[in-house]
Length: 379
Ligand SMILES: Cc1cc2nc3c(=O)[nH]c(=O)nc-3n(C[C@H](O)[C@H](O)[C@H](O)COP(=O)(O)OP(=O)(O)OC[C@H]3O[C@@H](n4cnc5c(N)ncnc54)[C@H](O)[C@@H]3O)c2cc1C
Image 1 (tube, rainbow, N blue to C red):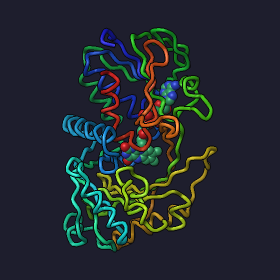
Image 2: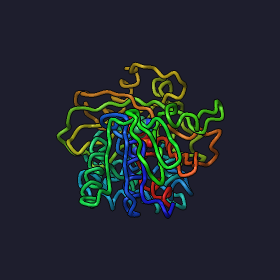
Image 3: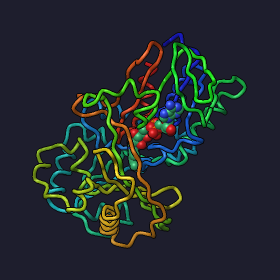
């Protein structure tokens, strides 16, 4: 890879774009192809959470912390990313959740996550918009926020500006890579793009050009997960941190501690939709609220209103006030490593042909970890 000078990146999501950034840092020329006119996959549908708090101790936490450093550094260079070191509050609704938060706050790596357990009054001091009901909260100062609808164009403008006059970076939207041969790819228009290295970042497109490397039936290294999201009209008051509710303790591996077994059952609507409340206020004041998890394909093509009712009620319980009118709803699909197949892998990377690297499957940690994953690809 050290001798590669021209890299073709297939995929305009955050993984492809971070690979373009890291390739340019090594002085490589980059051509990035995206099959759509603009990327419209998981990378623009997410919360923009750079989420350290929930990561599993060990390799996953280290990857997320390295990524957090890289996001902060990129955020300083590229204001359009909307990077904010806002931190997060995970709020306990009752005693068993609070006991689990206490356990997490006492973990040996709690200082790396910048955890601090707060009582309700201290929660309100950090985040005065929280006037609702909760038993306490876990502040994670390491968590951060970016603006998912701005990140990709902002990074491309940065790449274009920093490669100016050198022909260092070329963005080719509306080009689907359909064929790969040694040292070249062909897009659907028939045009060839010659290079020393191909990086395929197709996201959840598990068929298409990457399909033959991923299709292994029950042994497929990656699977897909569908999530539901919504966004409100702007709220005038600032919500100073990202928010998570007690249901998130059931999903994130950092809370896989003895106290998890003591948690009461989830509300029926939350259990059905595998929901947890995550809430992020956008730079413009809107509230991005989610999420749900659907693992079995074929996925529904429509949106389940009961899950939204549950998430809205949860948000209003914590805020102690009605949320503004919902203006947008959408679903998103991400690719994640199949737990039973991947073992401890945090994402999928394989050299599928000489000089062709396939990177996908970071799951719900993909926005967070993308800069560190791209850094690892180039060694
Ligand atoms: C609703 C939702 C919320 C999430 N929230 C968070 C969060 O807050 N924090 C976090 O860390 N992670 C989050 N994630 C996960 C994260 O968004 C994903 O892991 C990450 O965006 C994956 O990036 P990607 O570039 O691999 O995929 P994508 O964003 O799907 O990009 C892949 C791109 O490749 C293009 N493509 C595919 N095939 C070809 C081809 N042959 N030729 C050219 N182009 C091609 C596609 O059109 C697409 O634009 C969330 C995901 C979802 C769905």
